[in-house]
Length: 77
Image (cartoon, rainbow, N blue to C red; front, side, top):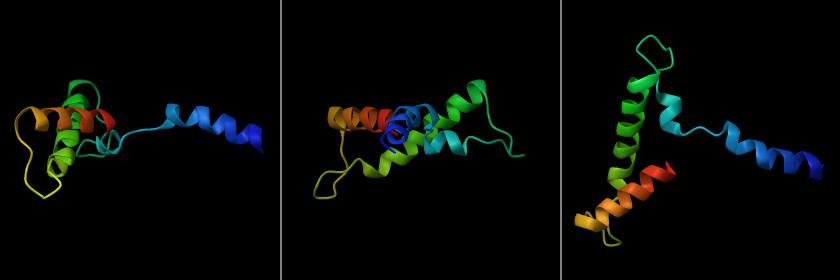
């Protein structure tokens, strides 16, 4: 059992896929590729992080603080 759990731990990142990459489909349901996929994933990550860029009291972040937050959020997404 331990061996299976350990092997799954190392295999999981290889199969992991961001939610935006999973949504990168054309109108006919085929997966996007190349520049179209890159543009879609970038926009998707930005759009998913934008509502989270707020201070603890609910005010929108701005300036360098927002830029730092957005970069980290998009890298984690």
